[in-house]
Length: 493
Image 1 (cartoon, rainbow, N blue to C red):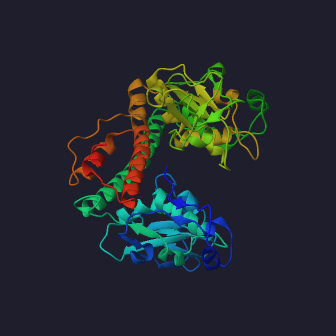
Image 2: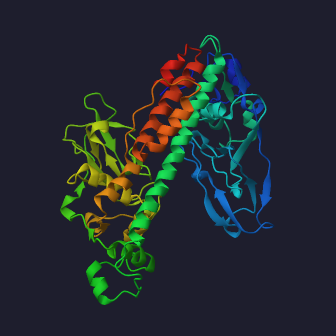
């Protein structure tokens, strides 16, 4: 990944005095850019200033916090909360197509675009709202640039040089936005449109992932509730026999929520199955290892690399003298929390597609299973990541600060014996390859991509988001460095 920060080895006396005689390296860094066709963020977009006092407007709101921005894609989530549960009485009213910028840790990619049409959207004041464009450029072009490495590097330079590293509106007149030139392409507006289209394609894929995740939940719920042996399962306080069966007290397995959710599977008319404890294989962290080395090309898989929707994003490679453990298609189960995640994070699973990822190695924070057919693996992964199983795993976790599940705990989970047709129907929303459209142009690119996105599985959509993001960074790099851009190259990939 390119860096656009020049760190000089020496500094002039004049530079020292112009920086208040401060030797801090962050004060003397320079931005690398060769394109002169630039503007600053403050000249391009207005800050949204529509506020709301929740104390005077009680009710339910769709609330957006800093952590609701997906730092990988820029997607924005929201949750339903009561006005009394919002920490501050003053919030920002939010509408579709607002760009939100996190005031803290902005350098991590806390920049998102709102896609929801909900009229009750509000956001914490820790998010700056960009709304109305001042000039005739696409907001999606602006968002694409703001999601790039070039923009994030600028943010890092400004915040590192500040006494208090927090993004402020006053910094907007320092943040540079580059625009295409005729040196790059005979029609610069075509390049600008291309960036906008790729950005919209990434956003649409993110929306389809959300829709397919909801559809999987709906399919599972309807199949289970429509095929119960009896209409109701009464809840009772745990008995001694229950305690002996589970052989554990540090758990939520005796709570009403677990009993009611688990009984949906237990009471399913076609029965259920379990995965025997011996099928769960633990990972390891090699004592001797080189990250991103050149000798071997093993993918390095840890819990933090697996997203909530069940997709492994390859970030690092590992070179080591010991044997690797990912040698074929497998289901990967996260067995412990990390980065302060909640207990519901335990149990999130993904399909390790060996055809795509090739050789890899996972650490002890993950269990793997190999002994099922591909269709069965895909169904198990889709079911494990459903809302129902997230709740069940949340009850089954043990520990206080760090939640976890042992292989024994996973072996106690039950899976409904859905008909093969229903399993494939559910799995198809998670994993479904669709041929890329051909003969794309600027005029039909987005429409054709959206039609394909509707058919493509969550796994493939995630994969393509990462690939498109790389292409977008490459495209922005050419704009920044004022290099030639072939439109057709980016349309055909």
